[in-house]
Image 1 (spheres, helix red, strand yellow):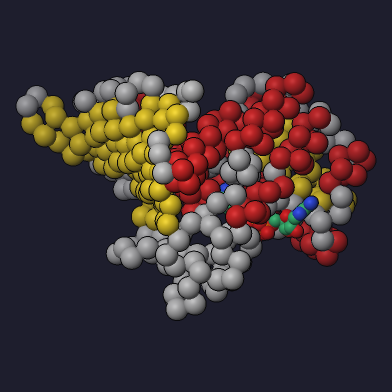
Image 2: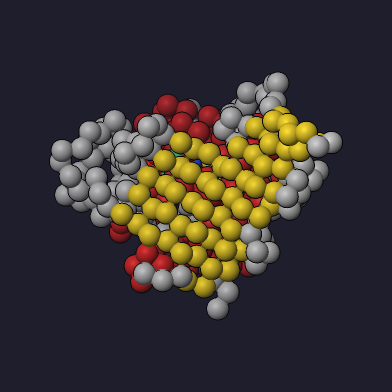
Length: 347
Ligand SMILES: NC(=O)c1ccc[n+]([C@@H]2O[C@H](COP(=O)([O-])OP(=O)(O)OC[C@H]3O[C@@H](n4cnc5c(N)ncnc54)[C@H](O)[C@@H]3O)[C@@H](O)[C@H]2O)c1
């Protein structure tokens, strides 16, 4: 079995909660180095996980340590540079979501992966959930027929993050669309078979984030530096005639948080969370629900499949190109909201 050496860039929450422990579960994979801009963070991460070397400069790590894989776990505004540096150093990369601040940065990353011959995978793990995988198998077998409409929601009632840079447009790129909307959009595009998006119409609102009188159920955020939307809505048209509606919020006056996909096909429809397929068989209407779905961590599956793809020379679970498609749609939604018109992606 090929032994693989992993380096981490950005040794904060997602690196410690997801990437490092999941690499350490895989036989023959060793996390050998970690980097963080803050010395204390890099050092404490190395101590916590028994990592041999730590750095405050990721370029130094790339120069000094022989690596096969790098996980890029820095904030959004620092996805592009470390990813390209690692690819150019001959290392496969798992980059956290979203691919970058905008599609232009994402295109440069995808191009760098092509040129270097290294794999670029995304930390978009929700499609590894067992209900998504079960639904995908049903869709691939024709259970829904031709899918012509989708609706996806990533909605929080009062969930503006009280930590990190989630409210700062210059560091994050956007609000809930970029933070949680990316997950549900990626899952929906995967289920719909990645039709080509051709036009997008969107609107964004900031109704809660700049107010001091709003309840914070995910900690207290800085209302002074809040420059992103807290609700976004969009309609995406695809080249096969299908349409998709997306809604995403950090805060909204709704009953409860929603993370869901609904699809309409000419043979069946479905809801994702919980999984239910609505169909007609022999002139009778049926609702189909799974009796058992295995419990599996989607983060763990994403990293496991990424490592398998490197070992087997096969496609990574979420290729950079598909992460880029999500961000191209988000860019167009933001542009449409700014300009108050539909934005073509095929022009
Ligand atoms: N897939 C998911 O479900 C998921 C969940 C949470 C976060 N994320 C993504 O992970 C990324 C990081 O989020 P987080 O919650 O771990 O943030 P975090 O702030 O906890 O960690 C980021 C780390 O990067 C470090 N850093 C900043 N500049 C650096 C530099 N130049 N070189 C090296 N390190 C540097 C910071 O010091 C910090 O320790 C974001 O892009 C976020 O969108 C994904």
